[in-house]
Length: 560
Image (cartoon, rainbow, N blue to C red):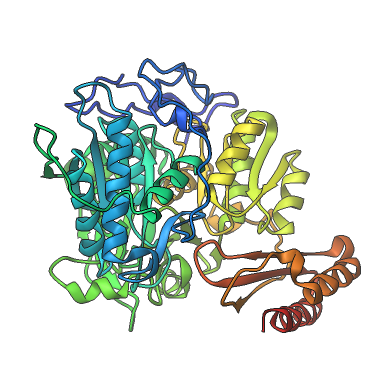
């Protein structure tokens, strides 16, 4: 098996460009993009052709005029990752959803070229309220003269990819990610494929709360928007072309991979995995593990590198499965996949969340490997190949001390930021990094321009390293020795400033002093749920339990 070159990987040399949409005038070469947080950059700009550099050329399209930050509305709709709530309630009442669609449609129409009709890509995950939220959004957009392209079930990374490479003015993913089935949410991407800047979200929120999106809709002498049903295949083609030949060239034998779709949006990725599979079998992990007979591939596919066991897939023919999204499966509950890996003697398990932007891996022993392990593994590989720009990795305040120590031993700097992929991406841009992510398994690999968290792409990159090195996943992850860590959630009716929680503040100061360099405390509010999260790391379980219990007690005293 040929090893990858020191300065340039075989993977880099053979990455194909995504196909050009029939309606797109963009280059077929894959752009390497970087995030911009200004509203003026929401219009797509062609990227530099230099691989691994996220430097964007000035846009040829007219940029939206910069606007002042609107006054904060009395009702909060957008959180750290779009809009999220129990479906039909709170921020996601039918009236609010329609108003959000109208606000976004009006914004896009206001910033369109003369005579241009904005087109919006709208994908959903398979939770029960997908049609409620999706159709209400579509109605609002159509009322404001936007055409809506509805492909049905689609992962968030695919929405971001197609928005950034296609003819779309914006993309929307209707999903509550890892939340339970009764919740839903709205993630919005600009035409560059990145999530909307905070000031644009504030404009939309103000328009909704102020009532400016209520009232008559007029055709203004032209037609309203159209709803178009159909599915783009460019993401599928890109993933298959990116990895199929590479895997076949590197393999010594097929690797057995258990894939847990979590009854989520990755259920449709059977279309992709079947093209990478040497054999394919279906099954489930709940309420008991079952798997059917494997179907062997023929022809050219006989050289494929993966024996795939596809578990927990949602199906339109079985609506009850839509209520099972994230329930006792997927990245939040990887134990079912771990059991399947052990039973099948598989090489790797891949656990997705509801919208597929993150993954958790299982090694061949059944041990869970999270984002910290993946960051260390990928950083070591990229540094050895000379493509880890500035020898820097970005993660969040939740990253384990074990990751920081492992990277330090490799001569790699860890930059920490607030929790949230948008903060990771901003820090990657600031520090010129091409690898970043979260412990949750939301990983951003930008060395080849794939600037979005994508659970499938991340898992396949890890498998590529396994094939290239011939090493099992457990050995590749051995460099990270995790500090014992606990995360306690304290439910709260409101979210007062952390500085106002006096009892918790005193306890945190005292316990931080006791831990010193042998542990760490991080306290934050959840961006999507009414929870105060208390994370503690310590060298031993006894200290961990004592410190965590003391902090939880202090928090409950302050929060009532």
